[in-house]
Image (cartoon, rainbow, N blue to C red):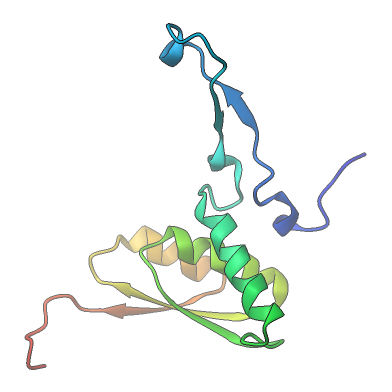
Length: 124
């Protein structure tokens, strides 16, 4: 039986799907990578895992470290999923214009969410 060691093993291993109707008049095979099969439902999962792996490899991210990121959702979700498996803390800075649901999901996967107001005077 084939299986992933953890959720990170499923990132990027998304299926290719043949496009039919959309390209029926083209004399070629057209495939699409179905990225919503990533654990965070986004291609950003790949980028987030790569960012963490690169930071680990060059020593910028040490065991038990903290990842701080400004996010509107998808990158944060990818980072949070990888961080929870690898033992890192996440702090995400997000604008108050993002939905409560996005903030709740990030918190549900273990992230601390810092909400920044957008209606602020330039001198403040």
